[in-house]
Each structure stands twice: as structure tokens, then as C-alpha cells.
Length: 376
Image 1: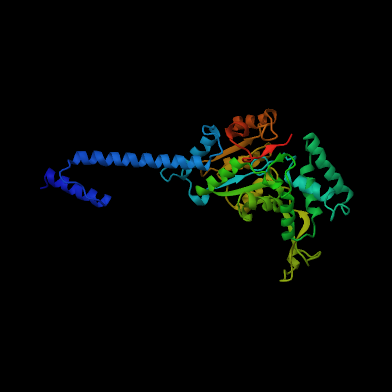
Image 2: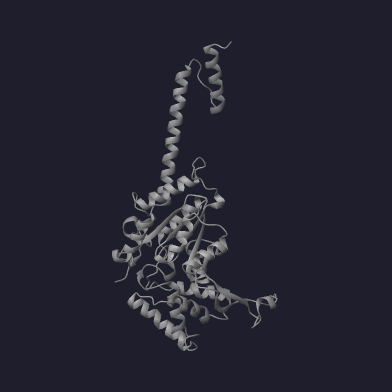
């Protein structure tokens, strides 16, 4: 039969083996357990501080006590903790982001692909003299959007077709370089950055934070997918396969009028733009494209406008896992071209639906990064 001394000796031996260090003889078992408890408490406290410090570094461009930041952290903590009832396996951790107005400025002075098209029709010496009357009319419509802030019904769809037509026959690789060259031009509305660098830096941190926590991140935009790929691959460091957008049809250089089912791609062929789009990636089409290309319903969404309600409803309807939705509210009229009046409808439908608003003005320490200022 073991005595109390035998138990103390056995306990010291087991603890010594676990710690990899000798335990002083003569220490009472109760004192030893108390000492171990304090060690453990200090350890978990240190680990918690290190984790919190890491999160602060990862989201360092956010106001420390921002409610939206804490909501995101709480969600990510819950779904990545294997002991949590809200745990989501990494394979199902999928986040989807809108681009314009969510990750990237849409008011410089308007959408990036609108400005690219306007440049192609009105300024590009290799094309402007060949532009059709309809193409010129749509380019003038872009200027009207800039001047009035009003996008006529159907205009987004029509310009999608026109963007494709204006680059018909161009090699896909050349088109990518064309977009990047345009992106390297100075920003029209901001000092200290080029047009293609207009990413919201706090949101770039969110993408990195999510990827670090095992999320697959997709960008789903109404803009031309090839345009979005060209700027996202550099600015967000996302592979092209994670970009969903308006699908521009691609052909073989020597395909001519033959259908794809009737033509065999050869080693002499190059991929070229056909001049046609399948469908403008807006509203319900975003849902269809995500369902078709990802094959899974995301659990987390980020948008900025009523145009993102469809994809948000789709994500929030995921019955398998806990979901969350965030909306960027462009209420900063000093560092961006926002206003409270512009942002209020977004705040309103966030309140109505239980989605989390992100205040550009109050939640971010910077918008585009150090040294970037709005032009007068």
C-alpha cells in the first residue's frame, strides 16, 4: 500500500519527466501542484497576450476599439477554435469580397474599368480613330457618370459589352500588360499613388489576416475579370484563380468564326479576346458565378453597396456553418470621396439585416496608406 510519501515521490517523478527538469526533493505535493498551476496560468496568460499582440499587428491599420474589427476577430476566433461549437474546417472557410468600394477605390473618379474604357476610346492613339459612334457615345456616358454621380439603368451592362468589343482580337497577355500600364498612371484624384494602387490598406490587412487563419479568399467583382486579375495579382497577392468577375470570352488566335467545339487549339495559337462577354457579373449573377466557380457556399462576405445584397444573402443562407457579413461604408470625405449621406443607406440595411458596418472614417487609421492625400 502506497503512503503519502510514496505518492509525493511518484508525483515529483512524473512532473520531472514532463518538464524535463529535476524536482527538488522534500517539496510538499500541494505546494508542487500550486507551483505548477501558477506556471500554467503564466503560460496561458503569455500566450493570450502574444495572440492579442499578433492580431493587433495584423490589423494595425484599424482603430483599436473599432466595433467592426472586434466583430471580425470574434468571428474568426470562434470558427477556427476546434473546441468551439462554431468551428469550421479549413476546407470550408471561404470568404468572398466585392472589389470596387470594398477593397479598391471606386471614385477615382469612377470605377477603374470605366476609366480604362474611356482612355481606350478617347485617348489611345492606336484605337480612338477606329472607335465606333456607339463606343464614343458610351465613353461620353462615362464622363456623365463622373459629372453627375448617376449611373443610368442598363449602363453597367452596356459598358461591359463595350469594354470587351474595344479590345477584341488583342492577345490576353497583351491585354494584361495594357491594363497594368494604365494602372501605373498617376491617380487622377490622389497624391502619392498610381491609379492601380488604390487599395484600401486596412482591407488588404483583413485578407492577409483571413488567409493566415486558414481562409480561402475570393474577389467577386462586377468589373471585367481580366481587368480585375491584372490589378489584384499585384495589389492583393491573390492568384488569378481566386478572381471572379464579368466573364470575357476567350478564343484561339486562328479560330476565326468556328465554334470552340469545332476548332482544335494548336501549338501555334495564342489566346485572344473574342470581343464578347458571357454576362455582366452583377447581383444574382454574382451568386451564380460563385456557385459555379467555387462549388461551395462561402461563410463570410464583404461588400459596400446594394449591389452586394444578393451575394450576401447567399452567404448568410449557409445552413451548415456560422456566417458573417461586413459592409464598408464610405463616410470619409477627407481621405476618400465619401459622405455620411452616401453611406447612410448602407448603415440602414446593415441595421435591418444584422450585418456589420465598417466605417471608413471612424474604424480606419488610414485609407490608402502613409503619404497618400486627396487632391483639392
